[in-house]
Image 1 (cartoon, rainbow, N blue to C red):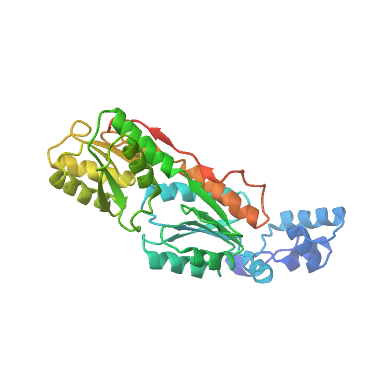
Image 2: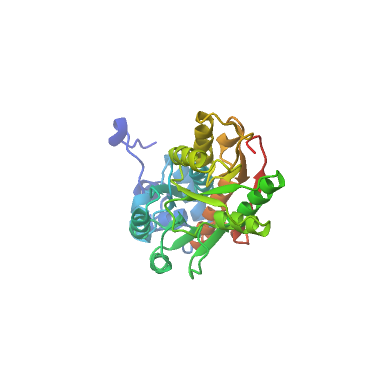
Length: 338
């Protein structure tokens, strides 16, 4: 047996030339066998694969990328990776991509419009695909990205985008479910916390909540902007208690905001849900562990990530066709906070 000497403690990584020598074929034949490209006799392919197994050869992905212009990498552009919701999305996407020999790169935009556009523009030249939770980008910018990156999957924006996949979470329905729930519990003085980083009137969960409240004859819903984080929830909770004591039911933008808000309410000497019913959105893993356990709109974040990755891979010609349909459903999980 030939010993491969050199790097890594007296042994170097086997190369494609080593595989070719062991199998008695050309370097090009090994490349065709590895990449399943071009004509190659089944017996020759079997001999090459046996040599690969014996030597422990692993293709150099960087070198392959230089030739194929593919990186086998898909990026997830997320608003704030401190939010566990995006961690669950990333886990679902990374698992699906890994099953097809692709990797996930995560880019945090810090809920900032300029960072979001910069991330999309820069990544479109560096990765094979982008999965993007978008809050700010204009349609013209997205069209430009779609013509540059081989695979683009857009979440959270209901826009026509030829050449890309646009997937939507039915947050309008989620907002309506929350309003119906609070009204059914007897609440007539309602508030909703909106994402302060978004343009007014663009939040679909908020629009669904307001529409359902209006249908029930409640027009004067208090709207309070907050950063979509736990500190943002604490600040808006203090504001709500101090300036709007009449409110008895509130829909928080997400679960982190809801958690911060509950803390502020309790520090003010009030109880949840006795004095204020609180409902969140996302159903992150910690939502059921808070005190009280949080009523929230459940989004299957891992499933969203996995399906988005399937669409990204399909656009790259990899894997099985992605599931049909472009809308993810939601459900209301009722717990003790409301």
